Image 1 (cartoon, rainbow, N blue to C red):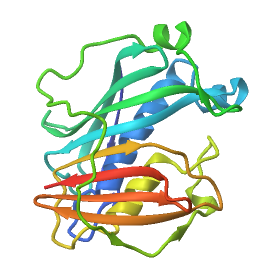
Image 2: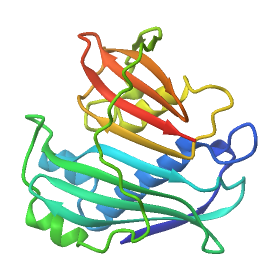
Image 3: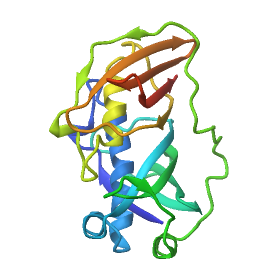
Length: 236
């Protein structure tokens, strides 16, 4: 398990003064990288070894958004490794111990040179350990089915250098930021799921396709060939 505590920064709040969805997810991603680094398997190791982790799904529940200056603790731990996959939990709590957000995620271990998944080595499993998952979390299927309705097709976006991370592809949080831009103005996100299917690279084009169904809003991000790179489902 790994955790870090820091106050909510001004750069992390949205116009209403509460922490943005993107900022909360960034805290979670940073926590996982800090965890990797704490066992000697962080970004420097990824670059030297040519191996690293690639997230393939998120399920995030937002219970409350902290305001500027609130001390919050972000915590993460791994609870299962199978073959090429690893599962990881995240929580964000305030200084009174109240859970503000929690998430489940699935990752694959992959060769950064060949861009192919590979079996998780013992050194990773031993370093992270396998702890218990959240007992009261309703785990959803990581696969997302798009509604059988006509989507609203948005203007295509070109991937820029700012969208690329150390793995040479679009960072997983960038897809979510892109999708958030198409939410209705009055849509308050209580839960989201994300499924990643293909990597998008520098110079690629992504076409957002939006679907509204009941209390859910879906955004599918497709490449120029019509293949889905990521699906984001937002729920109230």
